[in-house]
Length: 319
Image (cartoon, rainbow, N blue to C red; front, side, top):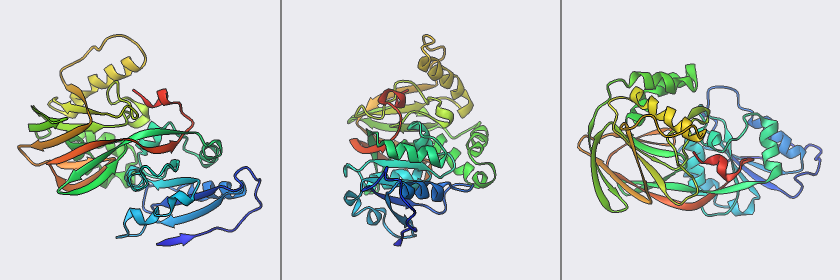
């Protein structure tokens, strides 16, 4: 494990006595990170900042085994880094900042976090946190965590196709990849929703904890990250583009513009546990990371597993 401590500048005293653990992924994102400036600002405020760089083949739990000795935890990287770190530190009761150093940074967007170092340092100074749920996913006996959503089908295919475009196009890679999913594979999904069997024919299943996509657009309405339940989204549309009307409905609901105008392409169900299988194996993604595992898998809600630092109110995190 790589541990560094920076030179100690003259502190202002705002964060005197504060110990901050920063775990960062040096491979995240496609541009220059503001992480060094952010850490410098914390040190100038009197904080003791300990840096740990992620190394290949080192379990995430190793980086946070002493996390309870720190005031705050900072996870700097993409959504996969943030969710893996949050899962390793679950129920440790140490507030965590999701520092946006990746490509899409959907977790940071859902938490309504700023992008620049001075504003993020101000979030730490404020110390305001919200306790939210996490998801735990199990595939072939191996467990992992996710904050945003897990999915099998068209959304995972979209993420797979975006990987080669991310370095050149950043967040637009996801939009370009979605445009390619005009004729995704359709299959019969076999689900267990809180133990109750359910089947449907469609192009994918998403299990959502947070509910906003890029630019804080709602995936669908009535998703809360702190209600102790997932929102399970059954994707029945023939292709990704046919889901755009449902996005319009979600925005209309968020703005209180009346009843839904479109229906039939999506169905949502609330659940605490979900098992997913399919006639045809599908790749999985959780929190934007594509995994080699395929269906079947199961997901369970972890109520109040993590406290995230944010300037937002609880209502701001709901769709």
